[in-house]
Length: 255
Image (cartoon, rainbow, N blue to C red; front, side, top):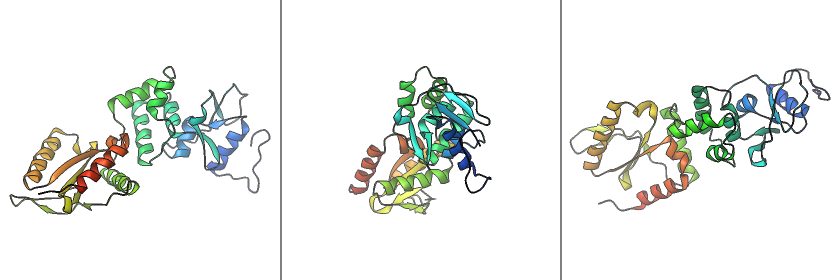
């Protein structure tokens, strides 16, 4: 396949085998950029891209990049040395347009991919890297999670509750209000009279939806229920604080 790299057992390799061969073909190389994005499942690509700390001779079918990622920007995933999800997004920031980068970042959050260093930390670490301006704009506008569906948001919230040993609420259950109207809260904990609404940009970004949400919250409060709203970003920004707040709300007495 490459100099000194041979497939054993069968000449038709999977994409995983081609990724591994590309990394092994370049001394001290790590899978990166679009190839790393594909391995992490955040952006499909057939390109074989490898980053190494020095310039390397061209290899057929491999696009190489010269850089030296730090130890906390590289990991072993499925037996392949690859840039971490955060470092991968930083590298993709230099070659994808804004919408493509946003989609990749959204997919990384949907898949709950974590890295030893956050995107914010990498932006501060590499102010002059080509991908830094695009990632800074993405973080500044907080558009990560903007394309997440309601189903994905609900799935992530359930996983968050399980991770922090918090009880799962009733979901989309009918609730009668004081004026005889009925609503379907996203999440309802009847014993604590607590309603949690999961705000995804896809369903709550219009002015009409914004106004309707607030009117419904008032009616729920008038019916003796407390209402809190949680966004995709908040589910990732400070999980420890959010878990503590929910635990306190669930434990508090409601007259």
